Image 1 (cartoon, rainbow, N blue to C red):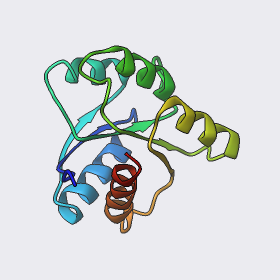
Image 2: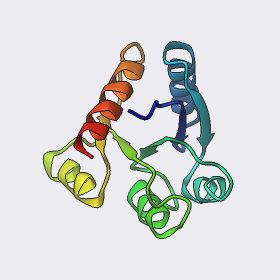
Image 3: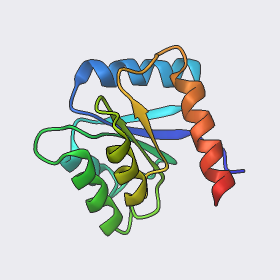
Length: 130
């Protein structure tokens, strides 16, 4: 099983990025990079190669689904597993994100104490399916 070490977090809310970074670095021991929007993430992926991407759904400009679609069109982001994060956790929307190719959806607000364990669990489950 491939170990999960490097996560890219994409969100437009600075406080959310700070909480995610702290939780996943301190509790999970992960290397965390952050991008403040879709365009910045696409630039990052030209040179960076995370194991996993946490992608906010609702962002100004290029939203999460548009960012995801653009990543899938690029050579560098085509096969990186993605977990969407969203405050709008409705069945139809979750199904849509999974049909797009995301491995899972994490609801916002998330529990900072359990976030690292949840990400590890989703990563393991996604590897078992492949």
